[in-house]
Amino acid sequence: MSASPEPRVAVVGATGAVGNQLIELIAARGFQLSELKLFATDSGAMQTLDAAGEERLVEALESPDALRDFDLAFLAIPAARAAEIVAARPGPRLIDLSAAHQAPGSIPMVAPGLTSREALEKLRTAMVFTTLHPAAHVLATCLKALGPPTGFVAATAMLGASAGGMDMLTATVDQTTDLLSARLELDDEEVQRGFNVFMREHERSIASAIAAQVSALVEPPPTLSVQVAAIPVLHGSALTIDIQAASNGTDARELLRAAPGLLVAEEGEPLGVIDAVGQEAIVVSVETRPQSVSLWCVFDNTRLAALSALWIAETLALSSPTLA
Image 1: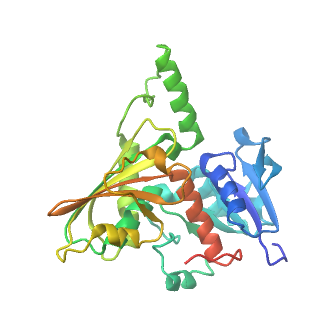
Image 2: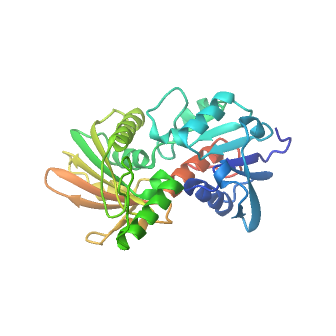
């Protein structure tokens, strides 16, 4: 461990979609650290990445023990590999982004705007944290802003290729190119990602995890139905939410405008997934009806995931900035 008050930080999965965002945000937000080391799986190692204007080598993480001299490690890697590191407890405080695809377990799952200061204070000595799925973060943030729902809540998440990491991004680009050239050939178990919207067992599993995460963080837990579909968009995702209108006539737009992390679009303004790419805010369009409120939310899922992980580190005083 470092003797410096500023932590030694490792980003594991630095060449991935979320890892890239983490590196960019560490520099952009002025996260104070004494050392930054970049790791990847073997296939992503021996590359160089720009980190705060400096070219840094990405090394292969041979074993969890390679992290023992760090104070903090972000795990932006597949769940199986992250689980190995968490089980090994190599020494640093771990922020596991892979658990976002799972229902809440014994490891604290926290998020900006959703976890209270009091709860974080109690967790200050914990050594492992997990982040929410970005769609769960969006859904929980909107429900918290609107107040306890009085009826059924229906939500559909439409996840772009970046939600599945660099491999899914590459597969979507390659398939789209092959489709346009009329030479696409798929293996028996392979799904067409280009020019296709689909829902499989994987998406249904994510939907169950999102519903469980929202129920764990929103009080009282809503009566909730969540569906997830994969869409042929490279970067960014979208979420629809339908909720019963408040009986007291409260203006949903004003409630959402007052919520941290939300940016409410002007009424009638066209809003696409591309409008949220590169933004830290969740962009929301609101349509009110006599008995219900419909929300169309667009967000940069990789940036939101990275921001949530960095917020944990900041708020636990691993760096000088602290967010409300």
